Length: 156
Image (cartoon, rainbow, N blue to C red; front, side, top):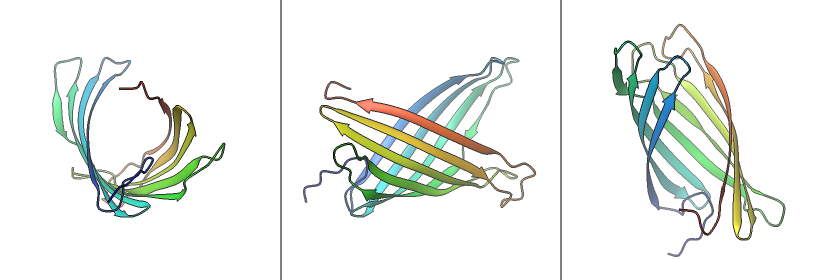
């Protein structure tokens, strides 16, 4: 079966993504994150995404920690494939499940847009991580995030 999709899988396709992220905070805390995510095309315009990560944290006082991050389970759906100046639009939603006792179950929601201007593609994401107290944690954390990216035929 030939499949030419934009930023979602074809039915029954499985995509694996491995990423590395490095962060350094103002208080000299350094974090390295190895992340895996797997995407399964469950329908022609819907993906199931499962992701998890392992994090290494270096603290200034040499008290380093490491461990599993929360497991994320999401569905991504596409509503229109876009044409001209009208972007392709989709939404991704799911939950982040804690692996530690007292961790926070988080509801994840992201809007996705892609514009195609030959030979470039432009991507924009806006989302929220909405904390809950479902796992019995004492604190609730909400995060708003946005990202912007482009690709060209000359990108790696």
